[in-house]
Amino acid sequence: MTTAVGTTVLLAAIILLLPGHFLGAAITERSNHTQPARQLGGLAIVPIVLASLWIFGPAAGLDGRFMTSSTLAALLLWITGFFDDRHHLPESVRLVAQLLAAGIAVYGLGSEFRLLPELLPLAVERFLLALALVYFINLTNFMDGLDLMVVSGLGIPLALVATFAAFGLVTSGTGMAGACIAGGLFGFAFFNRPKARVFLGDSGSLPIGLLSGLVFFLVARDLSISAGLLLPLFFIADATSTLIMRLAARENILAAHSKHAYQIAKRSGWSVWQIVACVGALNLILGICAIMTSHGGLVRIAAILAGLIAATLLLSRFRVRKPPAIG
Image (cartoon, rainbow, N blue to C red; front, side, top):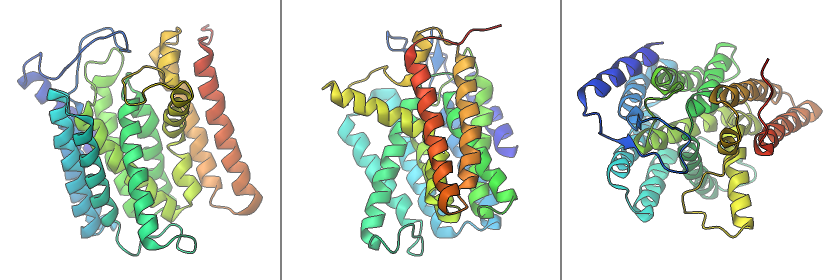
């Protein structure tokens, strides 16, 4: 609640104090918004989330190394994202910043953090975690293209992580980190709801992607690796399936596009509320599946399959281009 209120108040102040044209999001043929919007969300949500983590994180068990490293990594992406929003930095600069930030963040997990100790050497696991974090940073950026999409797609799973902590399924530190980011996103939602006045921009989506990815790493450690993948599965599935389809079509995957499943749904007549409600409902289902993975054997396998099937069905529905009937 504190993070949500802080984000709302700071963002309201930023909107009032900065010129109306500052960080305006241009409307193009690829845009999913038809009204003026500004990429100001990151200027408020990132400092509030980081401040909340420092205020509440240590008491919840988040250690200094993790806090310091994740803060430095998030600030690096925050600054890089701001300049990219303002001046459109070269892809090489963005990639170097993301790799550096991911490396710093993974270092902050500590040498005792292991997901596959019996399968991979520490150095290899760290390298793969850094690559996964870079991917999650980018797919969060890809998904910040529709009103409330990041709120529904990430805010709900992160809020579920906080709920898991209340029942002892994950550590209190993991739950607190999820709660801080979710709170920031819910505060941002006040300005991002249809018709959105504000989007996260790169200054918001890049560091929020990094911090969220770290939370899902912690869930993978505390609960199960499959749970850490199931919670953000819609984002992963939409971004990855779109990338594969574009590669199959021999398109330039670095070029801007509007071929994500949620973008196709919006252009084919789905309302914003229909899309984000479906994503939210899917995430609740994925949350249940994540809890079930705490059991072994057939129960875990069934939970993973159920999550994969649910995500696949929704993506297929979005890509069919037919909105659901109302009334």
